[in-house]
Length: 128
Image 1 (cartoon, rainbow, N blue to C red):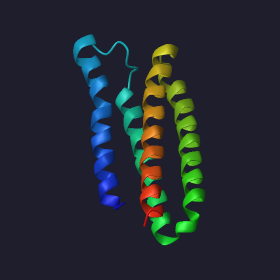
Image 2 (cartoon, helix red, strand yellow):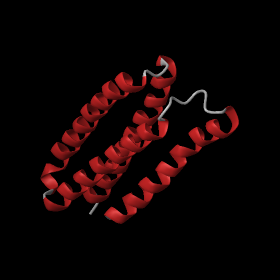
Image 3 (tube, rainbow, N blue to C red):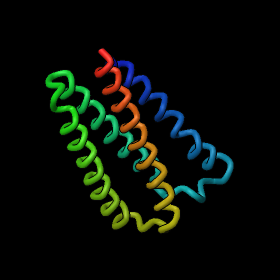
Image 4 (cartoon, rainbow, N blue to C red):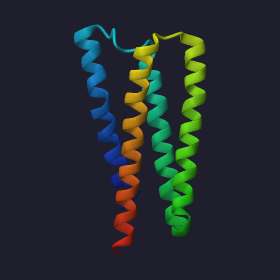
């Protein structure tokens, strides 16, 4: 799969992921969203994009390193998100349940896209 195709898929996915929070803000005054939700949204989305790009670039250079790059990028993303959560909680003191739901929404859906997109790419490479 070409990098441009997965970038387009990621852009579409990110836009679709932003729709429910936008609707919450518009209709519910954003009570379910933590303060600075969009900072968290941007951080997790950018990390996902970086992880996908790193794995695809490694795959183009050396196909045998795909699994290692995938595990490394996913681990880096997890650790970076944990550090971000620590700093975010210390600085903003969000409501616990709303923060947990918001972060889980962002992290798990981005991770699911990352895994799906990269595994789909691997399947396309193996069929050649």
